[in-house]
Length: 290
Ligand SMILES: Cc1cc2nc3c(=O)[nH]c(=O)nc-3n(C[C@H](O)[C@H](O)[C@H](O)COP(=O)(O)OP(=O)(O)OC[C@H]3O[C@@H](n4cnc5c(N)ncnc54)[C@H](O)[C@@H]3O)c2cc1C
Image (tube, rainbow, N blue to C red):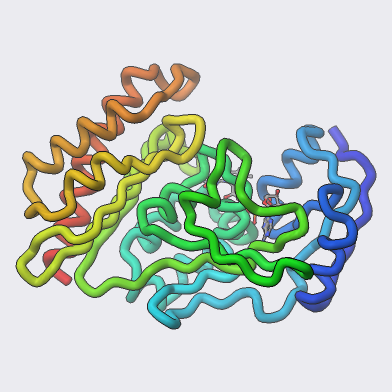
């Protein structure tokens, strides 16, 4: 199917883009990589009257480590994460996740920020950002800059706290000293969305005790699910197989997968348990070696 007719605007400055968003509001959609928006428009699930293409905006493609966080700006593609020395040096979970996202063609165009803004519960990056305790930065002409914790940003399936007049300009991921993380993903075939995805991140103190824990699940709930009860169980304890088994059981109980072409609910719940245990063990092993 063809999309409905729309105006296509290509602003050359951030101010110009924010001006269009402020003037046209809810009729407008921001176009980043187009890897989710264009299919939605072709299926007529989305019919914006105006597209604001942000791909020509300068100063929006940085990945850097500044002020205690790794900054991922709006035009950073999935493949930029794979190629980034900063991400490789700074963040194990992001490094582990990027090669699992879609296929090489989609990874060349699709953006990390676009994935989080889209908030498809089958998207991998929202789980990663939940596990890492990231913050989202939104800018608008009249509201200035808002910094939103990722848990508040991700409201519900395909729904975020972003106002129609706002541009998501960057995601900030806290830096850490002694930590580790990784992403476990089951997919039917290369390039597919997750049947189940599990993101974990652990930080340890000098005595080896867990000081910070992040666990989030993909494709097994109506939105990306942060398993706060399991995270709380881990903090203040030493890593062990028994502890990770307990946390994994909580994660399996917390999710609510549906039976579909990718597998039965029971099967997916069991994968959540196995992957959470495995992912936590891997994260702890990385943290202990760092
Ligand atoms: C074949 C295929 C396989 C895929 N497999 C996976 C997969 O395995 N895992 C996965 O996680 N994803 C997968 N995806 C989705 C892909 O990761 C998309 O790139 C991502 O979901 C959206 O990023 P985008 O830059 O393409 O956003 P777009 O499609 O341009 O936009 C998506 C939505 O976010 C909004 N938006 C985008 N950027 C901004 C911004 N800066 N500020 C405000 N709003 C913004 C848009 O207005 C739109 O509503 C797949 C896509 C395809 C086509």
